[in-house]
Length: 331
Image 1 (cartoon, rainbow, N blue to C red):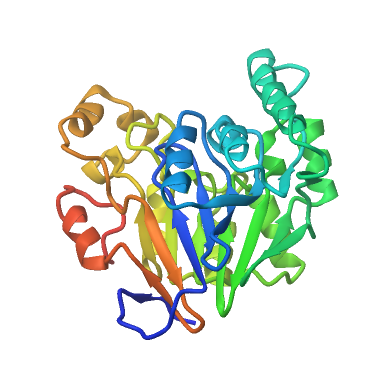
Image 2 (cartoon, rainbow, N blue to C red):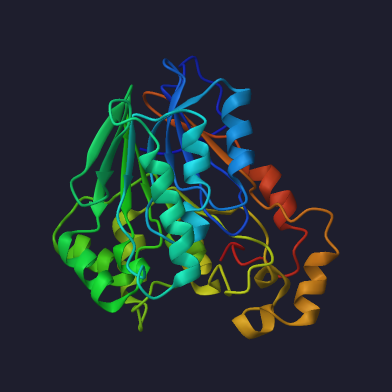
C-alpha cells in the first residue's frame, strides 16, 4: 500500500499516528478517534509535561503504554504520562544494568515504583517480549522482539539495546514498524526466521544510528529491502553528541523511501563524522538557526485504504533546501 501526502479524500481516519519531535529521544502516540484513547510507545525524560499537555489539550487518555527498553531517552517520561491517564496496561521489561549503574538504577527503580502505584484492578503490568499483543479500536499491535534469548543476552552482557522491543502496528491496510533501539542481530533473526516485517512507515531504530554489529552494511541493506517503507522516520536531536543520524543510513534509505528526520543535525552542514559533528564550528552552525526543526512532529492520518502524512514534502523540502549538505538529498 502506498502512502499519500495531503490527498483530499472522503474517508475518515480510523487512527491518528504522531511521531513527536522530542529532541534526542523517542515518542510515538497512536490514537483511536472513536474512544479518543491511545497507545503510547516511549517518552523521554524532560518531555513528559509536553506529552501530558498534548494529550490533555485533545482530551486523549492513554490506554496502553510500552517502554521499549531502559534508556532514559525512551522511558524517562513514561510514568509521568501514564499517571495522567491511568492506563489499562503498562508493558516493559526489567533492566539489564540494574546492579552496577547506581544513578540509572535509581531512576529506573523510581519508575518501577510509580508503576506499582497503579491499582492492580485498573492497570495490568505486562512483560515486553515477542508475541505480546493488543488492540485498541482499529489499532492492533504485536511485539516482534525481544525473544527470550535476546533478553538473556542483554542481561548477561549488560547491554540494554540487545533487549529493545520492536513493535509492529497494524491499522487497516497500513503497517507501521517501531524499531526502539534494536540491534543488528535482532533484525537478522527476524529476517532469517521469515517474520513479516514489511511496513509502510518505519521508525528507524536508535535515532538513525548504524545498526550495532552490522560491520559490512549487509544487515542495513536487508532491513531496508525487507521492510521497504514508503516513509522512514528518524527521531533525533539537533545537538546530540552521538553522531546521529548516520549519513550512511540516511543516504541508503533515501534511495527508495521518503526520509523524515525530526530535527536537523550537523550532518546536514557537511559534518559527517561524529568527531566533526561535535566540533565547535559544527555546533555554532546549529546555534545560529532560528529553528532546528526539519520534519518536526510527523502526523499520519490512517484511512481504511491509505495514509496521509501531514508534513507535506514541499514544506519539508523548503527546510531541507536551507541546509548546505542535506543527508537525505535525492541521489
